[in-house]
Structures are given as C-alpha cells and as structure tokens.
Length: 331
Ligand SMILES: CC(C)(COP(=O)(O)OP(=O)(O)OC[C@H]1O[C@@H](n2cnc3c(N)ncnc32)[C@H](O)[C@@H]1OP(=O)(O)O)[C@@H](O)C(=O)NCCC(=O)NCCS
Image 1: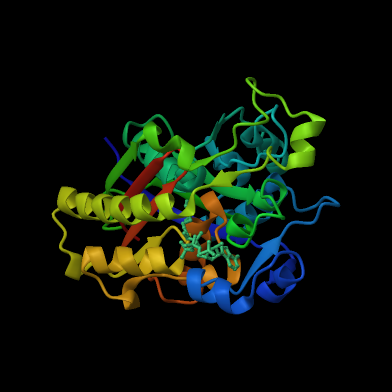
Image 2: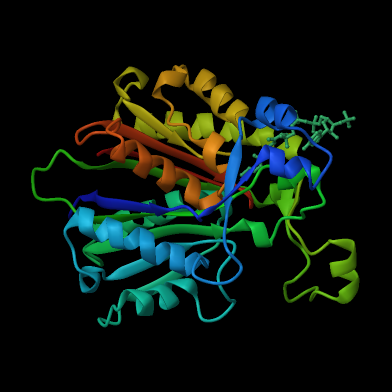
C-alpha cells in the first residue's frame, strides 16, 4: 500500500476576456446584477480558430505541471481527463492529449463526465490507483470550453460560465512524507439530473435544425434548485472528509471550493463554520469553468504563495448529475 500526493499543478486561461459589460451588449443584464448575484466580473473565452481547444489548454497546463513535478511526459502512466465539452466525441480527450504530450508508453487514457465535480473525481480515483500500486503518476485534467454549449440568448445561464483548464499530477508520496491525500469522498444523486441537463444531442435525440433554431440543444439549468442542493452537499461532504481523517475545521488552512457562485461559497463557508478568509476565491476572473474551477483556483493559490507545502487543504466540488466530491490533503 502506497500513499498519494500532489506533485505539480498547471493551468491555462484563454486569451480572450469577456467582461460583464461585454455581456450587456448580448443579453438584457447589467454588470451590477451579475456581480451582486454571482461575484463574477469577467470570464475567459476560447478561440474558435484553434489553438485553444480543451486538449490544447490541457497540453499547455500539463507542461507547467510536469516542470513543477520534475517529471517527463513518459513518466505519466494514467491520464484522467474530466470534461463535459470534449474536443470531439471520439477519440477520447485523454488519448488526444497523450499524443500532444508525446507520451509513447501506451498509458491508460480515460475520460470522465461528471461535470463540475470532474477534477475532484479524478484526484480521488488517482489516489486509489496510486494507493493500490496500479499507477505511479496520474495526470488529472479539468478542461472546458463551455462557451460552445451555453445558450448566449439565455441570460439566466450564459452569464455564469467561462472556459479554462487546470491540471494536477498526483503521484506516489515518498515513505514517511507528511504530504499526502488524507481522505476522499465521492457521491451522486441522479434524481436531480433535470436541474442541469442537455437532453438534445445524444443518442436519444440527435440535434435537428429545429433544435438549433430554438436553441434547445444547449445546456439548461434550474439555478435556484442547483443553488440549494449545492450548498447542502458541499457542506456535508466537507464535514465528512474532515471527520474521516480526524481533522478539526480549525486545523484547515485552505478550502478550494467549486466556483459556481460567490453566494454558494459564502453559504458553504458558513455551514462549515469557517471564515471566508480560508476560502480560495477567483470566480470574479473566470466564472464557472466546471471541471476546471478547482484546479485553476488551487494552482493560482500555490503560485501566489497562499497555499504552501504542509498546508491542510480541502477540495469541495458539486455539479450536474448531480455529482459531488471532496478531498482532504496535506499539500
Ligand atoms: C442563476 C443564479 C445566479 C440566479 O440568481 P437568483 O438570485 O436565484 O436570481 P433569480 O433566478 O431569482 O432571478 C431574479 C430575477 O433576475 C432576473 N435575471 C435572471 N438572470 C438575469 C441576468 N443575467 N441579468 C438580469 N436579470 C436577470 C430573473 O429573470 C428574475 O427576474 P423576475 O423576478 O422578474 O423573474 C443563481 O440561482 C445561481 O447561481 N444558481 C446556481 C447555479 C449554479 O451554480 N449552477 C452550476 C452548479 S455546478
């Protein structure tokens, strides 16, 4: 039995920035409404000319993570690619990324579709593979081009989302290392699937010109319902992983929550009995980038020196499905 730890991280944000003022020109909304209700000021949007597809962003982010981990591409023996906006339906994004990275060791390549919980699902799965010796260095990717799947005519949802990518390499911890993943939880409740779905475009209902005319092939969300379940679930899972590891909330240095809405983060902090000073927040700059929010926020906080080696960190995510997951780790 081995222990797993985070060896290195990376991120990529598309060059184009779309502010709330830009959105005012597209739908009936205002910077003030968006900022007050969500905490978002701007988001990044991928180029549709190429060079910023989800696997491209993952390539750029992984180069930095490999450097930070002091590893070569062929040291990766498992790629877990979390996304609900893959480059193409087939082949999977992990296989495309394997080629872009120049990995020639025939490593395992898996895509997972768990929406905003995707990165946390990936980290927790990586932990299990490393613990059992099935993998040594797992690249976990959260990369999304949500701008392709949101309805830019629906002010209820288009204001919330953005594009971006964050990655982490989860690897074997040296014997006796205090840096390691301490406890994990993953759960789902499919009965809430209709709160956030995209029913058109799959095997059951292929997209027709009528869907395109109506805009019914885009993602659809019941914001209020999502809000309620999100706060309850994030708080429950946060509490559970602390309890599993015998860690008190006072000992936690940082919480890296899914960035869906600043009010969700504030309510979760409140329910967990923690101050906002422990919450890593960057929703103002990126909006909700689904599977990419947690690794981008984590990477930024490491890069700017807030999160240091030895800190106790809690990942806490929630998404469509409904899916949820949390990770407690000593970085
Ligand atoms: C979507 C969300 C921001 C809406 O905030 P809210 O406070 O619940 O707002 P409401 O839905 O009550 O809407 C209030 C009013 O603002 C209007 N409104 C909605 N979007 C608007 C926008 N972009 N600009 C201006 N007005 C808007 C509504 O039409 C409504 O008007 P009405 O009262 O005349 O009908 C919020 O529910 C949310 O963040 N939910 C969670 C979403 C989420 O996290 N999803 C992903 C989870 S992984």
